[in-house]
Length: 136
Image 1: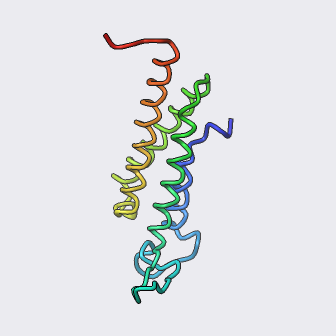
Image 2: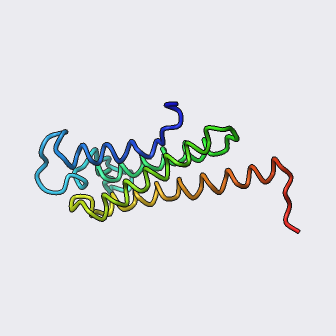
């Protein structure tokens, strides 16, 4: 049952924990705080921001969700329904919570949307192949 929980829920939880101050109150925008900085060979400095790290985590979750969508079993429908529910949570929060009106949250919401659309598309394509339906 825990395998069916969409991983795109994890970035939403981290975002909300930060938004509501569980990790401590941050002065200003917490999504632009640097995680680390590396001096490059070109003398440029690469700085990874907390918001960027959260987006990368969301993309990793999306990859795992797309791989999970290639399964053809009965719990797949439950998995897709839960992914749709997570996207609806993102959308409602984006529209109603002032702290969620950021580009980081918007990109995470788009990742959740791609999870929903990609999951349904992959499952339908796989079912079409399994049952031998061909376009004429």
